Structure formats: C-alpha cells, structure tokens
Length: 125
Image 1 (cartoon, rainbow, N blue to C red):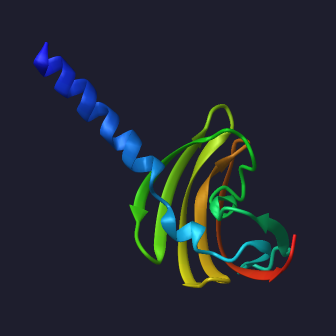
Image 2 (tube, rainbow, N blue to C red; image 1 turned 90 degrees about the vertical axis):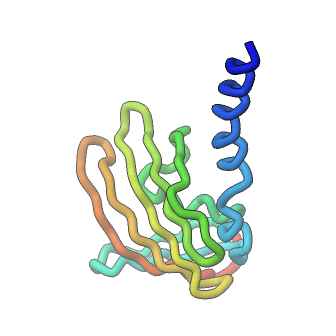
C-alpha cells in the first residue's frame, strides 16, 4: 500500500510542476501585440493578457493539452496537442518585455505549418 501511495504521489508531481511554469510569459507587457511573420505573411494583431496567447497562434482557443519542454528565464518551448485538429511545438525567446521571437511548427486542420515571427507590443487592447 505504501508503494502505491508513493507511486500516486510521484505521478502527480509533474502535473503540479507544469502548473507553476511559463513564468517568462507572465513577465511580458500586456496589451495589443503585432506578430510579423518572416515569410511575408500578413501581420496579425492579438491581445496579450497572460502571454500564453503567443503559444498556439495556429490553434486558437481549442482546448489543447500542453507539455512544457523548456522553461527558462528568457525562453520557453511548449509542445501541444489539439484533439482532432493537430498539434504544434512553439519556441518563444524574450528579448524584452515588449519584444519576442517566435518559432512554431506542427499540423493544423490536416495541413503542416512552420513559421518564424517577431512579436512586439504595439498598443492597448
């Protein structure tokens, strides 16, 4: 019984660690951000409230599950899966509170994607 209790407790630890991660994103300036794609795609404006909006730019609000691969003071990497609509892996590097570099790749609606972009705070939401 003790072995089972330890197993159950240790299985829960990664989930707790995941909940406290992504601190770097919370240090970003809140407001309207412009995403400029390096391939010449049209700019996109998003409202950043928590910073997590920058993770799933190709899978908006789809209840995706996430796994934090890297969580450093100025860089994060998150892999996510969206049931029935693909997956992605995003790397965000913070240059300043209002400037980040984003690289992401994956599958969305059955179509592969890969992009590099710069995100910059450009105003209020």
